[in-house]
Each structure stands twice: as C-alpha cells, then as structure tokens.
Image (cartoon, rainbow, N blue to C red; front, top):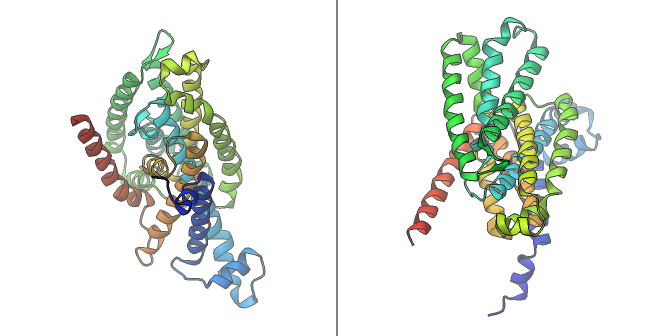
Length: 351
C-alpha cells in the first residue's frame, strides 16, 4: 500500500529536521521567559533586541546576561553529547554505546576529584577563576587520558576489536570509580560538597565569558563529526564490506574516538556529568529518520540541544528558589529508557 501524500511529506528528512529545529527555538524562548522570575514574552523579545523600556531594565539583564548564555551553553553541550552518542553507536555497532562507556565521563570525574582534593593545596578554592580553570583542565585531561588508555589497551596488531574495547571500558570505569572512592574518602567536607555538586551536573557556571571560548571549539568539533556521515553509512554495511569499499576503518575509528572524547571531555569539564543525553536522543532520531547518518547526525545534535534546554528549564522551575541538578533529571528519564533498550534487545535475542 502506498503511503498517503501527507505521510510522505511528514516523513521527509528535511521536514523532520525543520520541526526539531522549530521545537528547539520554542524551547529556547520558553526557557528565556521562565525561571524563578517569570518574564513576559514581549519583554523577552525586547530584551533580545536590546529595546527594553527603563522599567524592564532588570528583566533585560536577567534575560541577556543570565538566561541567554545558559541556554546557548545547554544547546552546545546537548548537541555535543548527542552527536557523540550517535557516532559511538555507529562505530561500535552497539545501540547501548555512549560516551560514558569508553571512559570519558569516568576519566573526567577522576580528573575533577583529583584537582579538588589534591590540587587545592596549590590553588585554593578562594582563587575562584584559577580554581575552576584547574578543575576544567584536569577534567578534560582525565577524560581524554582514560579514553586513550582504553583505546591503547584494546589495540592488537593495529586493529581494534569492538567487544574488547567495550569490556575494557567497563573495567576501566570500575577502576576509576574505585580511585574516585579513595579520593572522596580522604576529602574534607568542603571538597566533598564541591565534588558532589559538580558530579550531579549543572549549567549554573555558564556565562558569556565561558561561552566565548566554548562555542568556537564545539562548533568546530561538531562540524568535523558531520564530515564523516558518509563513512559512518559505509560502516552500517559491516566492517568487512566497508574495507572492501575503500574505507580505512581503523583510521576512522581513531579519529572519531578522539573527536568525541575531546568534545565530551570539554562538556564534562564545564557542566559536570550529564548522562543519558548521548544515549537517548540518537535512538529517538533513528526512530523518526532511520539509520542514514546524513540526517541522523544533524537531527541528533538538534534533538540533544532541545533535550538539554528543556531539562535545564525543568531543573530551574521544579523547585521554588532552588535549582535541581540537571544531571539528576536526565538520569531520571534516561535510566528507564536504558532499561527498556536492554529488555527489547533481550526479547529480540530470544526469537
């Protein structure tokens, strides 16, 4: 039976991408208007156009200097996590793969707690800017370092066996978790509180200064990942077939793992551990658009951005005069979805 013309239009990738982009813009606008202080939509528009009346000067400052940089940071972080998840699921040919599986998040957490507990002797927390810069540098170095170690251990005669790498990633996550436990055991109350808030994930540190250096790096990383969409499509045919079609699979994997580790490590350094965005959003986009990475990668980036903008909004408005860590909200939704994927895979395997 031929699909109806309406259904054919609805299924067009360009239409789906346009709807997701429209949803992102709507989520960004609503997020700019809502919070501890609700701001009328007309005031938000005037603030964005720098046309607010004198009576709305405070609202203009709230929108332009607090909410907009936070929303744009959520867009960049969500897009990075989602596109990294889509890429890793493709190169590992595993629908459960996400950046945390190869040690990026655990390595970042180890770097952060190491600096908070031991680096504070050199740079005390009272030196706010240098202290946060130190946490960010150690977090990114830890994420990339653990990822490279996992990759190196999985390398055998110039080739990577995907299953071996995933198992090494799981073992490394457990080992790093134990090291984090030791660091937490020896930390004092202030260090423990600092690490706890960081590990729960939050966009509270977002501002224009952070955004000014974060945006160019993440845009370059996302652009670099989008360039590999056709090679990822070849991987869908199978590794053996991709090699015979002229694709250097090992070289492709090395590059993509480094790009995704760098991007996710950067987001972890900035916002802490925000899980499951990289796992959920590629699946939702794959249900709407299929496995073609020409559409899946940009759709995942848009959907990831939308997801994190909405999650951050809910984190800000769910508790009055307080803020729920956004990582807690994404885990609340993501963990059941992860269980659903496992149960579905188990049912398929039983047939």
